[in-house]
Length: 248
Image 1 (cartoon, one colour):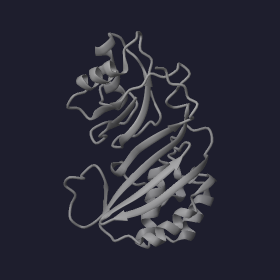
Image 2 (cartoon, one colour):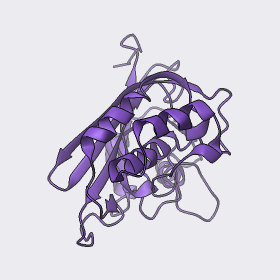
Image 3 (tube, helix red, strand yellow):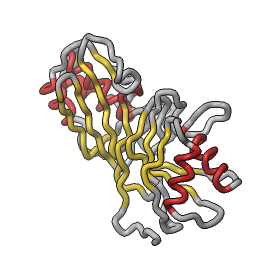
C-alpha cells in the first residue's frame, strides 16, 4: 500500500497504547475489515509531527481480499482522519516494506518570512531570517557520500552502525519556500532534521562550511548545531528492487 498522512496530531508511526499513531489507526481500520488484529510494517518509521506523501506499508491479511476492496474499506474506516490510502497492490509473501526498500526520499519544507504561518502551520518550519542558499548548498556538499553520521543521529537511535551513504541533498527555493530534498538507502533517527538544522545555521551566517565539516568529523552528538523541528519533514517515497514480485 501507498499511504499519505498529516502527522500534526499524530504521535509518529509506531503503535502506542492510548495515543493516535499511523500504525494504530491503520490496524484499527483493518481490524474492522477482517475481524482480527493485523500488524503493519512501513518503509519508514516517522516521529511525532512528521508527515508522509508516499509512505509504503505492508500487511498480511488472514483471507483474500481484492486490492480495490481493501482500498475502499480502509478509506471508509479512516474517513475524515489524518491517514489516507492512496493505492493498494497484492505482493509476493517475500516482500517487506522495510527490509525490501532500497531507497527512501524525504523533503523538508522551510518557509523564510516574518508573517506568521496560517495554512502551513504545523506543515513547515518558519524561519524569519533570510537564508543564504549558496552557502547552504556549499555546506550540504560536505554531507554527500558515505560518512559516520554520529553527530547527526539522536542518542536513542537503535541503528547498529552510524555509517550511512547520503545520495542526495538538494536545496531549492520558490518564493519564501525553501525545500531540502534528501535521499538514501536508509537514515539514522533524526538524521534529516539534524542536517537541516545545521544548514539553517549556515544560511543565517552563524556557521560556515568548515563548521559543518567539524561537526561531521566530531562524531559526537554534542557537536550538533541544531535539530530542526518535525513540522516541515515529509516522507516522499520508497523505492524497491525492480525484481520485487507483484501478484495479479
